Image (cartoon, rainbow, N blue to C red):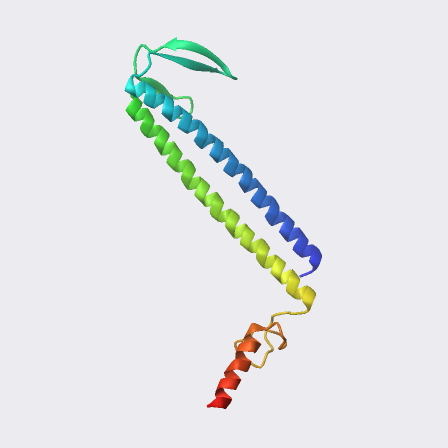
Length: 167
């Protein structure tokens, strides 16, 4: 593979990893927001406060008196359902679980990409040093084109030969 091809492949892998990192940050932000909501719902559940700050959006809040503990929860597609604090806590915990699972998948993919990038770098280094692997060494399992000082299998074969001669 030409060096330009390696660079393009590395760039593509890097861009994919960067996008995944951004998505991880979004997941972390959503988890943080959900945990804050969870704490608020737990305060309502415990009845510790009769007053709260209701978020109207865009950082605007209003003081509100709690008349009941039941909450109105958007369950998707703008469908709002009345739920108890306990039910609401379960919904939030389910969402947090899904976010954690998604995060785990992103982390695994990022690790795969880093491994691919590392392997590409090793290939480039081998090609630049003239150490190409394609199998022509005297040992049948060797992947080296020619025996060389850097070839680990050649070193192992020399050790095997020394041991065989001693016997």
